[in-house]
Amino acid sequence: MAVDRKEKVIRAAEKTFASFGYKATTMDLVARLADVGKGTIYTFFTNKEELFYEIMNQFIQRIKKIATNAIHDEDSFFVNLHRALYSMLELRKEHQLTIKLTQEFREVGTAQAEKALADIEDAILGFMEEFISKAAAKGELKACDPKVTAFVILRLYISLVFDWEMHHSPLSSQEIADLFELYLVHGLKK
Image (cartoon, rainbow, N blue to C red; front, side, top):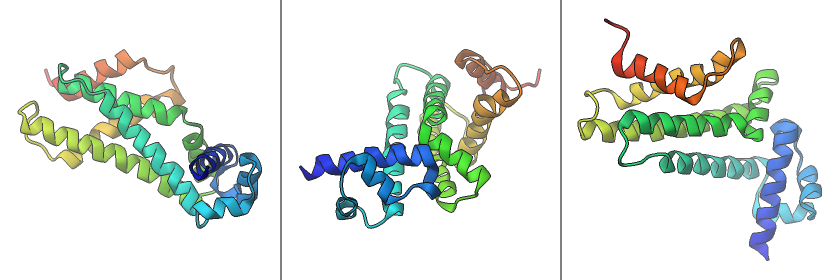
């Protein structure tokens, strides 16, 4: 069945990109891992780049679904936002392909890796911006620029989830939630 073969190609390509990165992945490697002829891949995808972006788009949809599932109507804006952000960033942190792309971008500067990582961040920011806009409209937040607010909150989370761990013991989800509440809900001013 064509759909099964296409899915087989996508899964094999994801494993290949996660192992070798964008630059070193070839259609021959993907075909070998998928156990299909290289021509089969080209019946579904024009080139490596199109195959790669299909995989990345599926990952972005997965991130959005995880974030949406983290939102519970009975919980406050900040509890929901923390849970959604933490879930999205944990997925990104553990996802082998994004790990490899981050490494490839830092070491080689591959444009496709940079674009894929930027697309993931844009998807997260877009989700947050919409969530912030809805909360402001319901009166849960002060009036603010949702785009700037989403950016600031995401940068804070990235700092607490990723950057902090470079030189310190990782913070727990609860510690991050507490810091988030301190900085964004209450502020530091006495």
